[in-house]
Length: 277
Image (cartoon, rainbow, N blue to C red; front, side, top):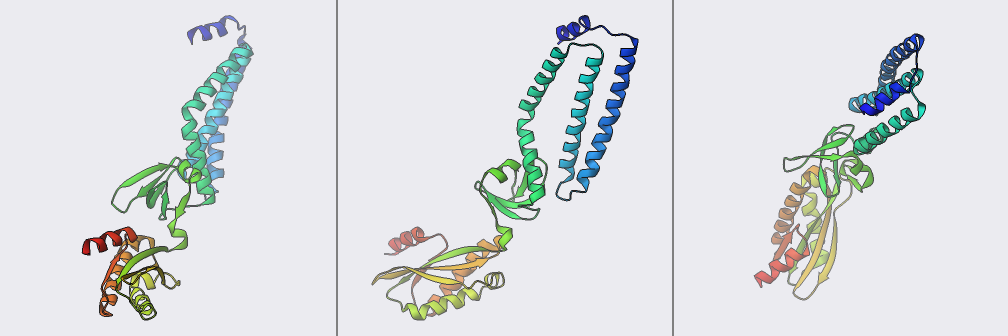
């Protein structure tokens, strides 16, 4: 770096007026950078989709760009060779690009997220196997609060580059409960009993206008496998499944049937029946 600066000085010839002009350009560039930063803040403040962190980062980038351009103009006024100046600018720009590549990508993704609003604070989302409620949106990341009390910070690029499930958009999610009925049950008589049992669960009936559904999967002389589908709020999905399992088991027991009910799927039921047998 010292050799580069000494080379500029040795190859440069400037007089008093060049120095005065360089000082004037430097002062003007400084004020322009300040005004540019303030102008960007004012302009972006009117854009409701952009948060304070994104606004400040964009304003700083604009100011640094103006200052870098001012320094290049000052060196040119002082008679510095243009090629070394361009080489220095290219090197600095390349280093800054490599150092800030990840930050710039996440910042750009943050601008898109805050402009298009695919998610908002309070939404329950799942992306790449990470699920939680959004508690903070910044220019570089999204902070999620999970159901088990943890907080996870994920980069903004993950929300744009991967499939995103926003459970808050629909207001409800679908869940399933599996039941294995032993013996040869009368399904025409049992289905209304199951639907009434699911409808009695308040966290199910008060959320969605879609009625619960019953599907038959397997029927043999020894048993029948059925699935009950229903909708509930995302935050109440686990409690709703538990309540539905209990309501279905009680209803089938009241109908005089021996059954195995679970929200874990058919494998659990098969293992449970094998253990009982």
